[in-house]
Image (cartoon, rainbow, N blue to C red; front, side, top):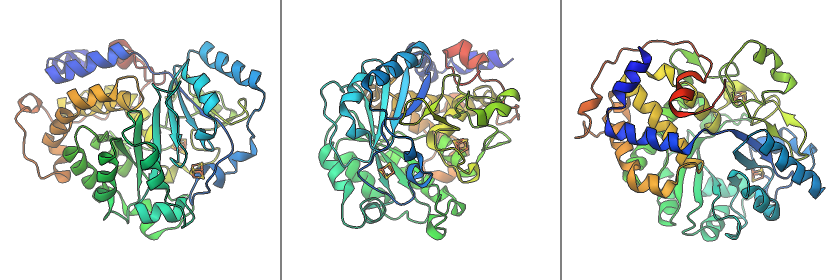
Length: 406
Ligand code: SF4
Ligand code: SF4
């Protein structure tokens, strides 16, 4: 029955094309590394330093670093997210990693990252709130990190800004996004988690509906430069997916063999089969991508929520709209992580993806746009079935080789 629905949905040419590209790109087997414990900034609300993760010092032995690469290759990992600390302090080691893995390097943007030997990486440049707040929270009030990043990465084809939105500060999102686009970069969005309990305008309890409306407007306006799924953004805001609540029990971004997760593993809950979050000593791991004891109730992590959605394909099969939302979100993830070239995605598919999203009744509150011309195929049942969260292989594995979980 589910396989029949899938076949029927894939008669839609856009969906069939995207699925073909995802299958050709193959499964993503992801892991994460703090490449150094050092950073040239001290941002307010930094999860890394607020949880004292820098107590795990950089492994200085180069042969140990080489062994780490071999170990991850032997585990069949093919994607590494590089965080820290500041990865731009470790250019030689980034070059070594880039020879073996798809790399997404998360940087504060204050330092340049040369092209040589790093041509094919993805660079995710962080930006928080708006220019004033970014300078306050990241530059100690006296460094405009954003201007530095714009200058370092002008027209750099590897770069996407990762714009951390704050629920109470929405008035300047458009202006800052326009600067990033005019700089010749991609833009993605994530959501501030109020770890330091600043409250007020910083609190996620205010909700992200207004932010999401603005983001989706920008996705349509700059449809070949913005990479952002309204489905993903809504799940982060509402913290629900088909009757399941966001949190530890459903989050797949856990170090699968960390002792803190042993009970969860015994319970057979979904996880990413290769994922480990390594500290800078290259051997110690933490419970999940963002910490040992990070409160899941305030977690708004973009990548972890992506993984939850990607692994929940079956839950999205009860209507064509749900399946399309799943497939578009999956495609955007593949484009963001370098498994599909994002310049190709931008030229060929992003505008059509955002037109489709705009046509879905589910997202009507985000847009003023009416039904677009290419949506006739999408008017099917709106009936929802609450599937249980299931082991993540099955159809996703069979149909497209996506290995998020087991
Ligand atoms: S740049 Fe990143 S690692 Fe460094 S202090 Fe800021 S948030 Fe933390
Ligand atoms: S803090 Fe976030 S990423 Fe970590 S286990 Fe909880 S929900 Fe997942």
